[in-house]
Length: 305
Ligand SMILES: Cc1cc2nc3c(=O)[nH]c(=O)nc-3n(C[C@H](O)[C@H](O)[C@H](O)COP(=O)(O)OP(=O)(O)OC[C@H]3O[C@@H](n4cnc5c(N)ncnc54)[C@H](O)[C@@H]3O)c2cc1C
Image 1 (tube, helix red, strand yellow):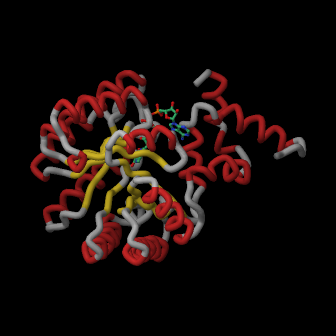
Image 2 (cartoon, protein in one colour; image 1 turned 90 degrees about the horizontal axis):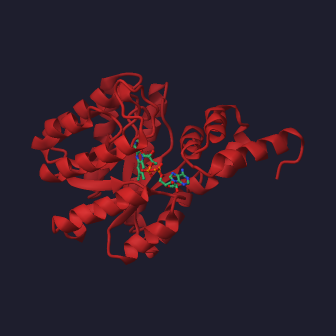
């Protein structure tokens, strides 16, 4: 990204919502569960798996958190009814982590129990670093309580992640490894792109050494190459790991990876609370900053497309 792009990206929160919605439509299945079902059906037909995310985060009322937990239970019913190949991803702040740890734990347990009844799986997304300790604590507690159908996410940009892997090793965790999207201070996070990549590879090796099932979540061509090389060198089979991408990002490349025989899962968000997720996706799209700036200026002067 150029300096100008970076400056524009930092101003994204000031961009009118309709412009954000226009440019982020590709990243979101739609506003309803029926939209998500339609998108996942197509992904499955293309040989891709899915993980469905009910959009919502930083929930401030207990009833809202409860409603999101219920929405996930509806998702499991629909996955089963439609015979889709999909699991789900949840954000703990959507399940009430900002209200209380116990409310969040109760909601998460309900979702995980429902998933088990439907022979399905729940992955806890990782949010900003203020939530890392609680997320890993909750993951451990639920795994120790016997919930095997639960996975978590680790972020390679955090300096602590290598140590977190060692601490989780006894659980033989199921981990999605990603770079990490939340902006963190240099004291706790690598900020240089090459340092993040190097730590990603180091953490991937450490996870595989620990016997973890790893979902490698990146669109970074260099990292995809490293991951494919590492799993190949270790003699891992198709069912021993997976690659993951986001809906709307590098879809042709994802199809090539499927054609090459890799298990690949696409993160598929849906729902009415699209704004925060959309901003994050636009912030990391290298081609988007200038386009949005032009559209915003056009709109301000009555020439919006
Ligand atoms: C399945 C999945 C789940 C994730 N879950 C989490 C999570 O729980 N917590 C968390 O902090 N982060 C999560 N992330 C986001 C992740 O941390 C990164 O911010 C994101 O994947 C971008 O990093 P990258 O590795 O793809 O590399 P980048 O260097 O950012 O991207 C590589 C290339 O991919 C393309 N690209 C990337 N993003 C976009 C975009 N939005 N639009 C268009 N093109 C794009 C560009 O061509 C870019 O050059 C997840 C990512 C994936 C794929």
